[in-house]
Image (cartoon, rainbow, N blue to C red):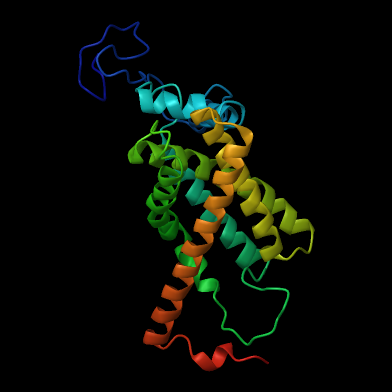
Length: 254
């Protein structure tokens, strides 16, 4: 008998290939064994996805430092974890917009005839990937005095913490907006504060800094984040004006 993955010769009593580690499948493909494999890989409490999710809340420093130090089988790698989270976020925004018919850009003031900006959410996945190096640069600068993590390691830490909050947002938002009439912008600002709090809780454990030190760094991060969002808003406005999808008349007060 040969391994279907690497063609290595196997003994008949092997359940895993000693050469490549692939599981030896002896049964014909049926719905039953597909479900068994799926339930083991995805829903088993010991699999790396759920383990990573649980431990990022309890001991985020251990998860992040494990990957950085080279122990990369214990938890899901940050790229895969981030990719799954962003994919689910895209599904969440689709449900909020197309199923729940929620205006994601509506504010409480309603003082302008500003055009609908919800098309931005069509590109939220791409924006998330593009902004990740910016977030990493911000935290790298804020902890430059400690010099524990380099820029790439800050990328890893930010990928884990951002993905974790994306998972939480999906789990909370879909039932919350399904049952209650809530302004998305209000929820978004509150969730931003919660996300930054979790992010700097993780960095506090990573860098072993005091409470007031981490609070000051978190406030500085929020200020930097505001400037980044302002810059993105200006860039979107310029692109909109140049392409004709926006007009300055749209922003005149009612």
